[in-house]
Image 1 (tube, helix red, strand yellow):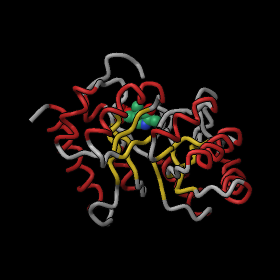
Image 2 (tube, protein in one colour):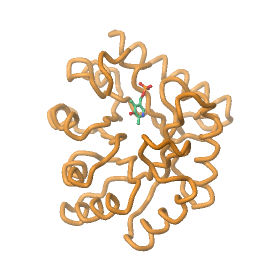
Image 3 (tube, rainbow, N blue to C red):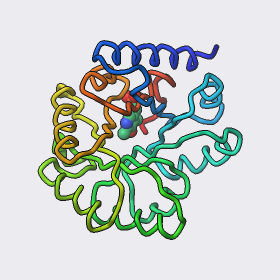
Length: 224
Ligand SMILES: *Cc1c(COP(=O)(O)O)cnc(C)c1O
């Protein structure tokens, strides 16, 4: 078994334990294996180990790897977890099955237009900047309700849930709790939260999707 394949098993075991500890059914959390910065040779062993759900944070990087991988493995589900520019909406809708990072009107409209043009319906999450960090993407918590409403009512987009990336130096649980509260009051079932350092905590707070990179693939050689 490759290192990545054995680390994948460890992560899956930890998710099962966290589900059990939280009194949640086994399998209620989807593991998104974040393969950004890793090339096809590193990804193939993880696919061979049974993983089918992957995440990338850049459209262009994903385009260089995933069309070939998707051709070889038909049941791959690819998630976009990085910030989205409207000039990439076309490529994003063409390649990704799930988009976690809808965060402003212009992007929502661009994605909507591409979904209509291409006849594709990726699952959509809204990113919330729970820490209000200026350098981070995401709608501010106080604007989230209005933005969800706009996406649903004005644009007719089906929104599956919310996504957040807590500030690196804060207790992630506070941010996971906030995201969950915003989701609940908007009737949203999906919660994309938790990364290598905190996915067990995220499962305890109700995550439906955890996005785990380095705990599976190892340390990234260069920043994503
Ligand atoms: C890179 C990335 C992850 C995975 O981070 P790790 O700490 O390597 O698990 C999760 N979510 C987003 C948005 C990312 O960009």
